[in-house]
Length: 182
Figure: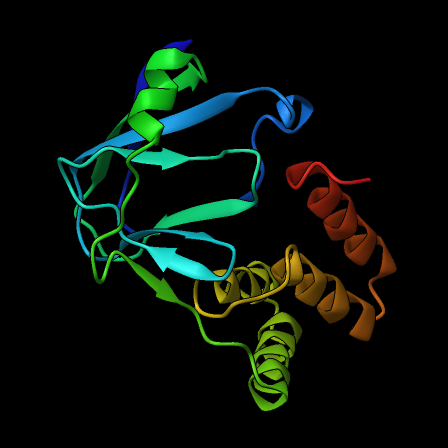
């Protein structure tokens, strides 16, 4: 379908989202070939953190919720091809494998960790750093195995606790839009 180069700079995040939700039932896949990467450049999906090693071919189903980050750098550069699931693709996809260490399950967030994270976010917001508070909660997606949209729910909870119903509503709408859910 098409091919592009994607660069993710250090200290960058693509928050949890879903691509091609309207094509969920169409055989369409995303192939990544990491050209330049580093251990802090990871994909998170289904409660697992995956570092895509350079030079390998990685297959993703972009209609599943996922996010990527590059926490320390250097730049992450991937060649990305979106392809239809034709016979050639089926042959390639019939031999999938992960090497040891490619994927790591993220831990479940405990109630104490959740409360501590929300407390930190509330403190930041009360000091006038609302954006930093939201970023703190969004980053939980890369640390914990949250339910789908869980980071957005935490942000809505932050705003509800502070009596900011409009902001909570905005984040619920963002969750619905980014995850293609009503």
